[in-house]
Length: 435
Ligand SMILES: CC(=O)N[C@H]1[C@@H](OP(=O)(O)OP(=O)(O)OC[C@H]2O[C@@H](n3ccc(=O)[nH]c3=O)[C@H](O)[C@@H]2O)O[C@H](CO)[C@@H](O)[C@@H]1O
Ligand SMILES: C=C(OP(=O)(O)O)C(=O)O
Image 1 (spheres, rainbow, N blue to C red):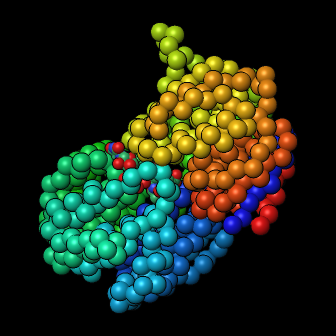
Image 2 (cartoon, protein in one colour):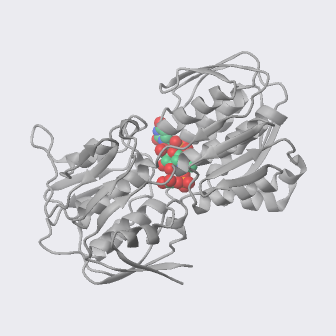
């Protein structure tokens, strides 16, 4: 298990370019299975989850060619379906969450799919009913081997259908859209997730020949086509990295410019950090964050304590709530952080409390943070990263703290942040990878 040793207190300065988006990459890479033609994909982040998915595609028979540091081509013209029956496939697929999205394309193209329970963060229950109910609505048969935790899905002649999803699941919507593209007739998906990564997926599928309308809304119409062809695609900058860098700049009193942020695709993210009192300037498509000794959390108009809560897009993404929470520890004022979607994502606050932060965990979903306004600094300690976003929040806390911290289990951070230690060192951070 790897660890980071972090000496806190350095003020950082410079420019940082966000990686290609992790959660978009996982959707897009699964999408290459939909066509036997060549797909060329750019801005693929070099992170553990994405590398694992590319390996898995290669094992399934996809021809993978590296074209440049962040560009690859993929050709799924000779898929080895027998590989899906191997123990190796099941083990590899279950090591990341994004692998669940190979099911939709496999079903669409080969009429069959199989997967063991996918991995990902342990942040509470992560049910997948939406995926399977959607496949069933298209006419597929679903079978779950509860002993081995294996999902089977079969359906040779999928037929378009109307469906109202029970929740706007992100990976669920991506899976159903990909399955429906080549189903016969029209599919309507209401209560679809509509975040930018799904918009990107739908735009890519349309370039491949799919007929999807309503992109960007929660009502998607898909007219089935016989086959899809190859195309080229470029990932958006990772909005969760962008939010993480905003929080990092504020906590460490650093002057940071986030380059090429595609600000118009960030939704409510910049405004949410502005409500935390963080100043930022948009300079073209860059976000400039000046060094700020103090930042003050707004109240609601009636003077009551601000709540920052997650909600499905265009609401605030749950993946940035841990960052908002850590950022609040050195703000002036109080905020209630309400994590509605996941029930085990706030327990990491214990570590922040050990560092000296003033936080009350009200229940598994809600934490009240009383900002220290830098009257005292957080203290460096040894801690373990429980999940990807909590991990980065602890890293931000450690970079702002007095003294040295050690963060264990950084595999969690490496799952989603590309060479984060090197990139932060370039900004002046004192961070070292130790084993
Ligand atoms: C690989 C990937 O892309 N992972 C992301 C994806 O996970 P994933 O697609 O697994 O998450 P889902 O969108 O399915 O659901 C997330 C959680 O929110 C709950 N829920 C969801 C929709 C809803 O309307 N109401 C509701 O309560 C679900 O029950 C679940 O507990 O989306 C999550 C929600 O943005 C992000 O945290 C994950 O980083
Ligand atoms: C929860 C996340 O990832 P995953 O769905 O891969 O566990 C995340 O990216 O914050």
